[in-house]
Amino acid sequence: MSVNIPRGTQDILPGQSEKWQYIESIAKDVCRRYHYKEIRTPIFEHTELFKRSVGDTTDIVQKEMYTFEDRGERSLTLRPEGTAAVVRSFVENKMFGMADQPVKLYYTGPMFRYERPQAGRYRQFVQFGVEAIGSEDPAIDAEVIGLVMDIYKMAGLKKLKLVINSLGDAESRTKHREALIRHFEPHIEEFCGDCQMRLKQNPLRILDCKKDRDHELMKTAPSILDYLNEESKAYFEKVTAYLDAVGIQYTIDPKLVRGLDYYNHTAFEVMSEAEGFGAITTLCGGGRYNGLVQQLGGPESPGIGFAFSIERFIAAMEAEKVEWPIDKGLDCFIVALGDAAKDRSVSLVHELRTAGLSAERDYQDRKMKAQLKASDRQHARFTAILGEDELTENRITVKDMAEGSQDQVPLNELANYLKTKMEAN
Picture 1 (cartoon, rainbow, N blue to C red):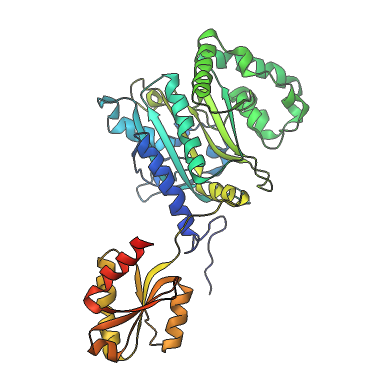
Picture 2: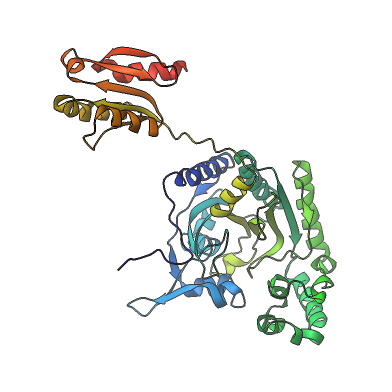
């Protein structure tokens, strides 16, 4: 009986995994420059965490979570997003008591949502995210947005669109909520069952509905920007002023609400405008979540963050045909001829690796021609040939595959020779 990979998941094979490593290395380097530190949380958490933070009325909680009972009859859920777990850790480990605030964190790892698989959307996917918790300064909003834009810029992406909005504070959202109910209620029977249920529970979620997004009432729905109080307006104006100050271009979209209940004030998405990228253009989403720390049992600690899918990042890179600066080559392949030379090649490869070089040898007992072909396939910068004569004379023949030159090198000088040649080039 054959066993296949579960639907909505994928194997990241050699040749592809290097792309993931490249993106992760860029993201981590940018976080280092912004002084964000890595946090690692469990892949599964208590189900209640996501119900309380993400929201009972969201598609994630209602339809998409992978939830199970353990042997102690505790309800656990594979994490569908990263913010809730980071905030839970922030509270549980009393990071709000640290001297330096806000606490700046980043994470990366697999998330799980039971969705219909399609291009760029998987049931297991990998997110990279950032959270800054402990400040309500609008400058930190601009910093977080600038951080993700720097990651995309460093990777070589250019066809991007940053969309922002303000969801306002609790007072502003209450007034907007009432306006949305008045707007949709007379014709709510024309909407899907989910929207009908959300009308009274959380009418803001109607604006995020994928089924009814083309309904006429969606186009004329009340804008949150018309219901912002003076404090919320001033906050949003400050955020946009800081973005202007650092030269980050953006578009204000009053219909941008994001799909999670914990957002307030600043909300944003980064979209790809690359030709042929696909119908789902969102690369990254984020926003401010004042109140979430208190909701999970901590003190008042306002926060803001974002997360992006590495799968969609890679798709955007390929849509823009950005060259991957990934070194796929090998420093040295050792061709060994004869039993004694093969035995010596085992320690010789180890010596090269210990010296910091990537090295390989033949493990299939192949002839010289086949070993040379293997060296070519692995794009070896140098091919070193060790036969019985070379072994007797304590030397090895080294071919520079780029220059086409060939030298005789003492065996105990091979690592230094290769490093010197590589540094010269």
